Length: 176
Image (cartoon, rainbow, N blue to C red; front, side, top):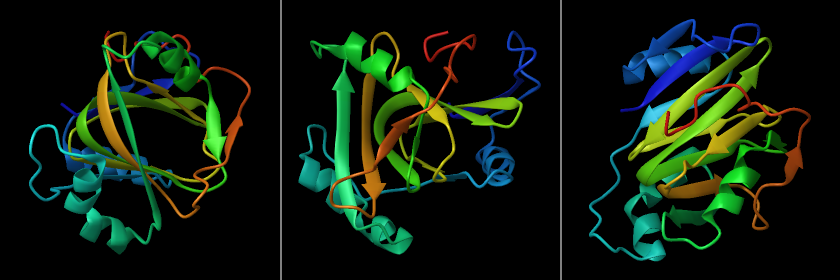
């Protein structure tokens, strides 16, 4: 189930609030320029190709105005999954909005907004758009299963900049 847990940086052991309803998640994140929606892409067969995954959501992608789409897929059988997890946990920000549509599986985004951390658990059919410049990390878990569409306006993809600190440090991870 998708949810957002809000933590004060001073007290990372217990969240201030946990929200599970899509409307509550969306309105809480929208206060900080983050967009959260539940999408219903077209039908997909198990084992769909990357082109089929993109085609199933093309109408919605076009409505958002993104020109480039890349498929990100990781499973527990991937040989370098541990290194991939560590690299995504590092605090980062992008030069443009960072949009992800979850096709399958799940992941946990941690967003730092001022003195608070927002742990956003996303799953199939969730769209999360993180505004340019907002520091965040992404946990794929110890036994990952995640397929997302990464949306951008640049053919080269998003320009990544690592930020100081670890926005995921001290918080429960995806598997906790």
